[in-house]
Image: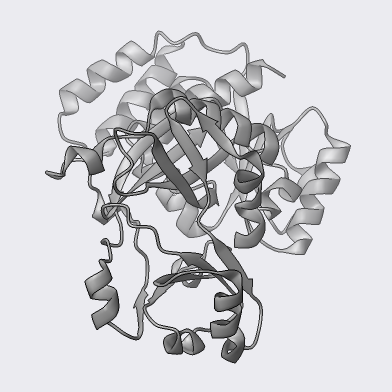
Length: 346
């Protein structure tokens, strides 16, 4: 690697304002020993401005440049085929027009890797279809079982919800989530309904899930290619039979799992805090990659309270495409190494 590029990397690290500047510079110099590709890996990205800020952080861009990866913004006002050439196209935009543009581009440029295929991503835009592949797997191994909570889809007519819930055999309390998962703040809102009458106050279209006591902790399983990383997040607290008998109404939550709710350093009951077995997660992630056809996604998983130490019962309650990797410890190294492996495998 040339002196000029080395100076650019060190300059970029200094500008980050991170604590421990000397350690950062030392680490960067070590990274300069990473085998440099014969030519740069060009990654064209089409992300919202919010996603760009959260994902393309200065530390990631510096490390990527160090490893021979260049991130280039895609101009949505110009034909995609007129831009590049790209080795990889990284995207997270919605809309039929954009999906068609990408599909046409994939056909015209099969040598370019599109992360990820737009048709595959569509399965995760709908909470009914996103969990179907998990339900169809009937997944289990020696460490436990993985399923989905009993659920019901309501597309219209809130007044019919109590009868529909009774016929489906769902028990209270009920978690209600918007049917469409488009990444917006509204799509992350959820409600907890304690009684039959309150179910009429919900707003379809939505997915209803039986609430499972899980110790108030969920596990976010980030998947980047074949690499997985697990972090703990605080979640909704358990609901006792006494609380269920005393409470009524619908309680709304804007977003339960977020960076501010990290439970990794909290003093928790080991039966609650224990991470899911690594081998189970690796097998589950591998099978979901195959079934979904995706490289970049995460799973929200809970463990049913009282099952640890016997045969764990886990539930996948959400799957998100291209989640907030900026919240994942060490994502810069994981992501850049993944892009290099992907480019070298072409």
